[in-house]
Length: 128
Image (cartoon, rainbow, N blue to C red; front, side, top):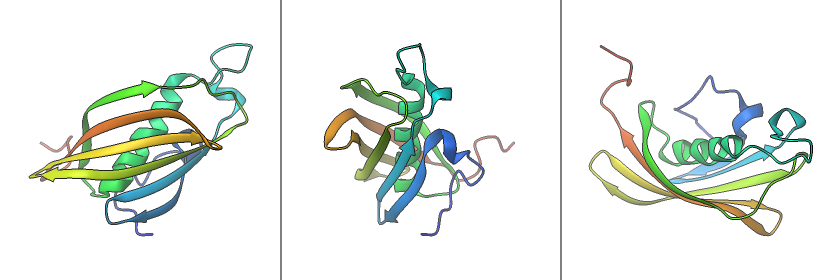
């Protein structure tokens, strides 16, 4: 795997890449107590979204890819100490715009699905 994007991201927060190839990625995240939103151990949705976003970025795998928007559905709650696997696949490319479908599973159960609109820019988004 040759990762070109998000090189400094903390993988304990967004997951560890398992596979990448031609518009596809698979990323795994072990949820931790630090991600809990409450005493019941519900993982905050921001961490779930972060995993999905990272998987989408890896499916595009360009140094200047950014997220433009997302349509998402949280299907089931996730508890701490569970492993979530993201499967991302580019569905359409139109110029700089890449539409990426992402599904997250905990075991065999889908817990999240989203469509991410990613843009490949000519230079870094923070460049003058």
